[in-house]
Structures are given as structure tokens and as C-alpha cells.
Length: 113
Image (tube, rainbow, N blue to C red; front, side):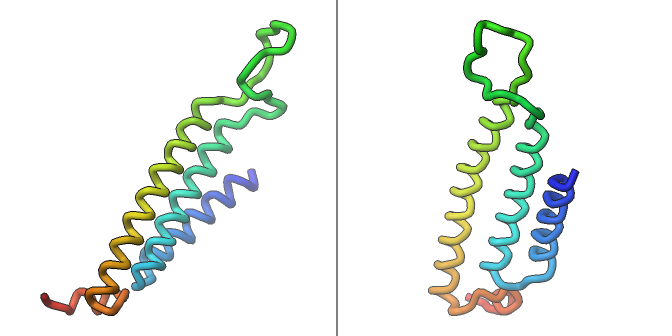
């Protein structure tokens, strides 16, 4: 139950960062925190107490509790996609800083090309 609370807390910290911070880098970090909180929640939902890895059953037994492999596969795929998305956002932030010499969203709204 504590891990659900921590996942929700991590999500709320990310939402707070998105809603209150005006720096692009801090906003990107907040989006990443939200992604990680969702990954944590998925992994916790797929966990089975005393579950074994879903590879081979020992001695041909079929009534053994396994950890859900689908959740693990989905989360590892989502981690790779989230990493690529974070890299693209950071590359945009670098380009914005090189062009406008600021990362403040309020200042960027007032700038005109």
C-alpha cells in the first residue's frame, strides 16, 4: 500500500512542477517524474507476492504463481519511448536557449521573431 502512495506522490510532485515552474528544463524533469510514477504503478500492479519469473516451471508444475510478464514488457518499452521523448525535449530546449538565450517560458511568450 505504501508503494501506491509513493507513486501517487511522485505523480503529484510532477504535476506541481508542470503547473508552477516556468523553466523549460524543470518542466521536462516534471514530465519525466510523471512518466516514472506511472511506470512504478504498472510494475506494482503486475507484481504477485511469492511469484516466480515467468520463464520455466520447475518439474513441469502448472499451478505456480507467476509475475505478469506483459506488464514488464510494456513498461520496458515505455521506458525506451520515454527516454527518446525526453531527449527530443532536451534537444528542443538546447536549441531554444541557443537562439533566444533564455529558458523562461514567460520571456519566450513575449519574444517576437
